[in-house]
Image 1 (cartoon, rainbow, N blue to C red):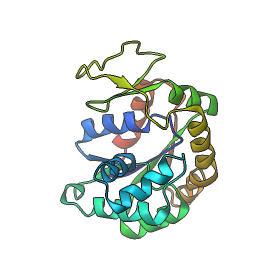
Image 2: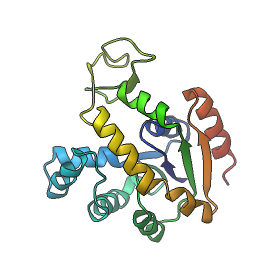
Image 3: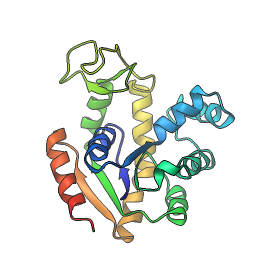
Image 4: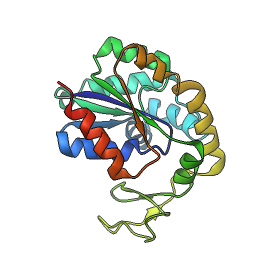
Length: 208
């Protein structure tokens, strides 16, 4: 099973990716994680990516594609995977189609106001990376590992606004690209995690 998760920041792609991974025992690949690993390793590509991420801009296609290609070539991708955060542009999508046949694209539709509210109230565990929202989770520490919860550097209003604008201009057009390939399924992401999960599992259960 080879899946792509598509949707604006704050639409819950990361949370649902984890749930799909747990149920279907497939690998989740987040370009955000790929970028963070490259940045932490201070590789040339990682430092180049950081200069764009810090400004709330998309990392250029040539850098992103090189990093994703390296990841997809690893042995643990042979039995299937979930791509979260890639592709983000038409060029990236066209390149991906040349590399591999994607089975399904899940598009997480989310209202703008809801996206902003979720992002501005998002907290991340510094130890295990679990994501929380202060609208629903009031504690200061992670319930899984007791790690401290912190605000991501890019979760501020200025950067959030830029990210959503970039998404609308560059990534949203991918919905039409995948509709033409007849592999796009739309998910209403303005709902609870459980409601969204139920719909996704029903869709995935119908895949041959």
